[in-house]
Structure formats: C-alpha cells, structure tokens
View (tube, rainbow, N blue to C red):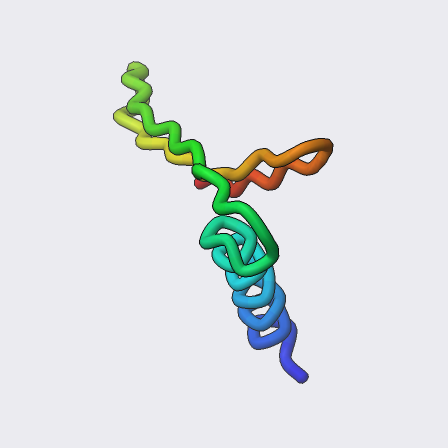
Length: 64
C-alpha cells in the first residue's frame, strides 16, 4: 500500500473515532472544543485551527 493512501486511511479512522465519541454513540454526548486564530508576522499571515474533545482522562485534539 502506498504511504499516502495509508496516511489517508489512518486519518479517516481517527476522524471517525472523534466523530463517534463526540456524537454519543458510546454514551453521553461530548461537546467539542474549537480554537481558531490568525498570526500576522513580517513574513505573512498564518491561519491556525484546532478541534478536540475531552472526556474523563482522554483528550483528543487535531490542529492545522
């Protein structure tokens, strides 16, 4: 299997786990947290974003 296809498969699996845990399939629904920002530097403008869920001892965050 190609490395790119393997990464897409892994990312899709991780996204499905986050979605299922956030929608309440495994119990009580969990509210996700979202962070977004913009950094302005002399080199340019850089956007950033992160989304995550936190329940009990488990936290999952994805950032761009």
